[in-house]
Image 1 (cartoon, helix red, strand yellow):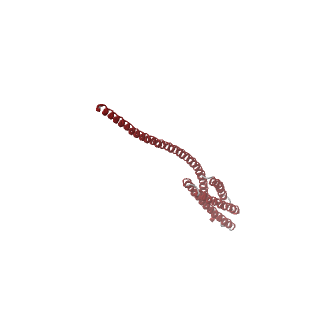
Image 2 (cartoon, helix red, strand yellow):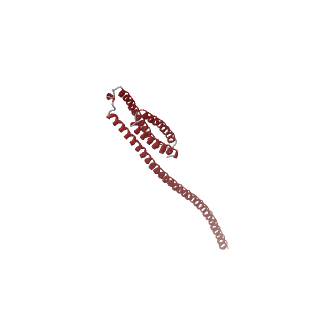
Image 3 (cartoon, helix red, strand yellow):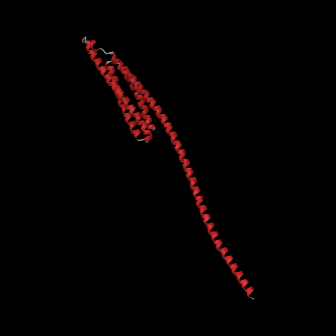
Length: 221
């Protein structure tokens, strides 16, 4: 994983944790306070999505073996942002109903528009989902670090194997050179042996001829 990606990811994690907390607190607020909190949430959502786009660009510039794992994490981050946006919509919807309720209270018609326990349950469920998403981010970072360590170990093993192969190749190259020299020496020795055979044969022939001449003159007289 690149240092640039990790930097973006740290910023994203901080923003996501802040979003989770603000969504939880916004659900407990009413009226103008809730609207202000929702405005802050939307601003941070834009920041988070910008960081996701930057992480996506950085991930696609890395090696395929690293890129695949990072893109999986980015899909989870995008899914988390979708959950946050859905939560903001529910908070806005609840806020709109609360404003209507306050208006109706003034006119004596609040009872028919009371906030139901089902709405509160959905808010609690959404808060729980946000907490789970935060845990997934932390787990993804842990897995990414373990994957990076494993990748570094594999690359080191491959480097050592490459060095061993290069050493073996150099050794074989030296053996080939020695064999070539040995062949040249044997060829030279073979030529000397052949030449010596011709010399010895000539000497023997000359001696035989001399002996024949000597015997011829001896017996002819």
